[in-house]
Every structure is written in structure tokens, then in C-alpha cells.
Length: 197
Image 1 (cartoon, rainbow, N blue to C red):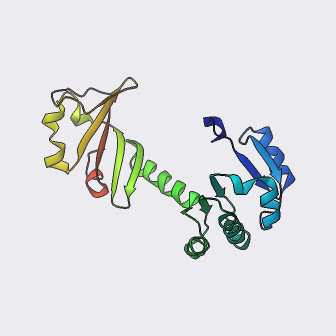
Image 2 (image 1 turned 90 degrees about the vertical axis):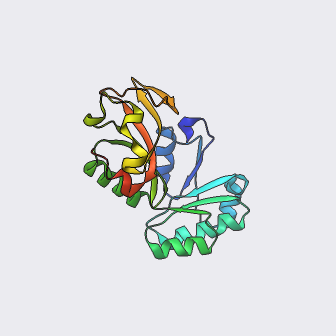
Image 3 (image 1 turned 180 degrees about the vertical axis):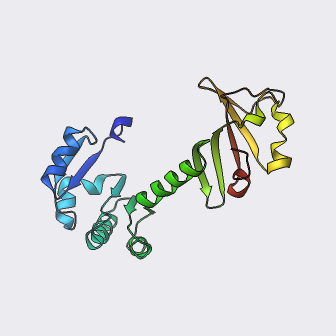
């Protein structure tokens, strides 16, 4: 986030991690505090932040207490990292607005990339539907978008295509796809999985 131009205040109880956050330039400011103490959070300016990410995943008690403290301190949007479904439920009960499982999500993404290497990017709309960018399968080369009949054959809609790094949104159905073309489709995951990739 810091590299994207956002001001990031990082806190940790471990001085080495605080120093590393500053050295690696992943935060604008970093402070060593005990996040389970509301006074320390207040003094560090945490309660004035628009969004707080509680990334304490392995220490369940500290994670829950910190999330509760931040929410009670008036932070509008709190994102918390969970290590289990029970942890997730507890975080939501104390006020987390959004709970993430980064290790699980990365594991799923790795599994998808290994089983479907033709998929370049995937954005899940919900557990059943996605938008994916993929390299057009070989049997799509030399055909127009209309000839592919993606909607009738696969239940998918083509949103865009990209060739040589340039995207064309809502493309003309008479456009021919060539080798190396990436396409962006939207649809049910079960239909995306039927594509010959």
C-alpha cells in the first residue's frame, strides 16, 4: 500500500519487525507498541486511521483483543487476518468488517495456477462466479469472437481481449483472435473450467 502512495502506519511489539518495515519501505511510519493496550493504540494514532489491518494471525487472543480495541476506538473499517473458521467468527463478533485468510487464499491461487496454467488472472465475484484473464486456447486462433459462440457453448461472456499489452474493452464480435491473445471472460466457475485450456 505504501508503494501505491498510501500513508501506512505499521505497529508491532517486536522492535526488529518495526525497523524492518521502515528499512523495506513498506510503511511510512512504524512504531513499537503492544496493540492489546488501548492507550498505546491511542498514543500511536491508530484510532485516527480510516482503515486498520490487524495482521496478527497466529496469536488468536492478541488478534481478537486488538481488533476489539481498534473497533471500540472508533476506526470505521477494520480488516483482520484469521487462522481458522472459529478465529474468523470471533473476529466478526468483536467488530471486524472484513476477515481474510491470506495463506488459504494463496494456496487456492497456487492450486488453480498449477491445474489451469492458461489462466493469467482470476477475480472471484463470489464462490461460484469469476472474471478470468486467460490465453486464448489454440482452437480459438484465427476465429472471430462471434464464431467462438462463447455464450451458447460455454455460458461465458467475453468482456475484453488483449494483444501485445493493450486491452480492447467490449470488442467488435468480428475481431479475429490470434496466437498470444489474452481474453477476459465472466461466468460460472464450472463453465470457465470447461474451456479447453
